Amino acid sequence: MANNGIATTAFSSVGSDLAVAVSFKLADELLDTGDDADTSPSELVAVLLALSIALVALSGMVSRARAREIKESGPESGSILEFIDLVLSIATRLCFSTTVQVLAATATSRSDEKIVRVVTLCSLSVFFVYISASAETRLF
Image (cartoon, rainbow, N blue to C red; front, side):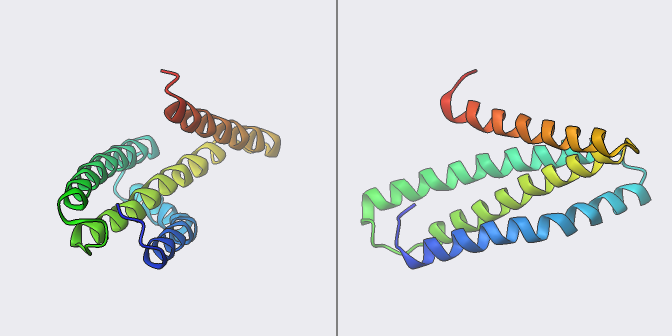
């Protein structure tokens, strides 16, 4: 994806803010809908993770197509692929953020003890930081 300044920065900021703000409410709605449809939270997490992985794969395909386009037409050529790549980036962040929100809500709903809920949330945070770090450094 070409880095053309203002648009990239604006979409990146909107994507981050959107993922944080919307994921809380979206997770609540999905959990409520799951309760109505007799869908367990673990099934909901599995579907969200699968969707997140599919979005990452689709984003990779669009990024490669955009890179080929830049190679052929130059970095200054505006393209629908650039817009689609940015939208997919926002959707991926939103999906991963919602997955984490559902996991956090599910993990904390299983105990009445505050300390257990706090330790569970901290453990969840450490787990996702580890996964993120291992993905970047190729520990696996």
